[in-house]
Image (tube, one colour):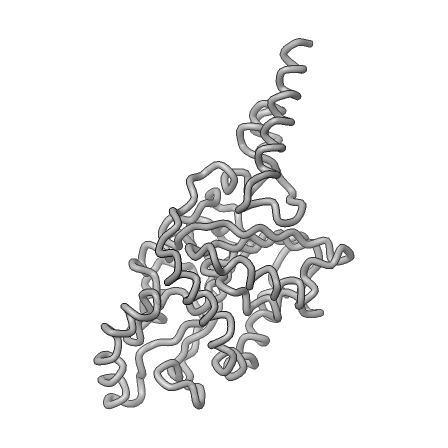
Length: 286
């Protein structure tokens, strides 16, 4: 009896600590910490708390202060033309993804940024009761992500969704193995330091065989060698100015070589987006 009481006290303390965290608990979540799960009932309970490790793993350190703040604002307001140009392709991809998901899906967005994909996750095509976890290294993205989530209706009570925003990097995702029904990652692999490691982490996070990875990335031109040369020449300076963003990556090839069971992706070119015109998009299966 005393042992049971002690478990209850520790559980309450853990939940109270999580509720006070500035980085977690933005809306009610479906799980509690792994430590609390172990105290409450061991593995069977923990198995139902797929995202327990998010609250316990070390978050990425705050980075560059004002520079991160300025970059977050730039991404929130400066990518409107690109998002408008790629919207038709994104809408079709998300609709296909939603048709493949199980009920109450767990969706991990890597590099959630200002959450432009809220438009699709909040659409009428999206399933209810989604458990959405967004990971981004930039602390200042959070306010824009929340605003876009609210505008898209993701957080309305009748939809039953949960949303948590966690600071972290793609090469070391703070989530459990095989815990995500889908990973969404758009305009992110252009900026990560190690795309191969990021893709390995995405595969680790996805449920085997059924897990889906939705990607949209700007890439090196495949059709115009002069444009591709200009992209390569512009990349070093852009990497310094734009949080590591590369114009010269061949990301579809990198995804195809990452060990996914199936990759369905297309190369296409947008209009009026400058060096971001060449783009790849598609779905991969873990």
